[in-house]
Image 1: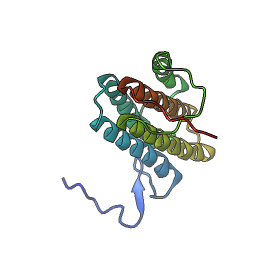
Image 2 (image 1 turned 30 degrees about the horizontal axis):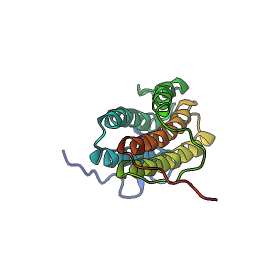
Image 3 (image 1 turned 90 degrees about the vertical axis):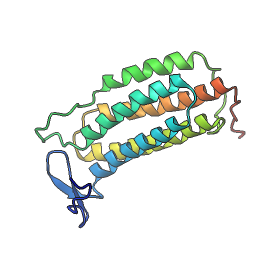
Amino acid sequence: MKIYTKTGDKGDTSLFGGHRVPKDALRIEAYGSVDELNSVLGLVRSGLKETEIDTILDRIQQELFALGADLATPRSTAKNVRRFQAQDAHPLEQIIDRLDGSLRPLRNFILPGGSSAAASLHFARTVCRRAERAVVRLARNEDLGDGCIVYLNRLSDLLFVLARYANHLSGTPESTWKA
């Protein structure tokens, strides 16, 4: 089987379930942004030395793949895919609370950066926010339920805490914004 099908050569693509849409449709933008985030997390993981963070990111990458499938499948399609619910963000909140408890309380805005791992995680956080914005735009036009947006919102919070935690583990100080 060849990797290329040539079916998208005129600018459209198939959703899970077979319906064809333009490649610049909001749905494609939404799950494409989630796919981009997943790829960025793969880059982050390729340079990580901290196994605890790597284990967390491995789980998140699995979940992002499922989130992409949810977004690639219109609710009207009879395909059986996992549909994200707001409670899918609860495990992320537990990780945030656990890691944040070992960090100094924030008293200032911090600049993205620090160790290589932290800087990469900050970059992933910004890609996550972009994916979230794309999903919000899609949700204004189609019923997605609330799970996808809640999950991405919480994930960006987790990526922020993971970046701080990576700096903490490496002993790298955080740079604060000087207004």
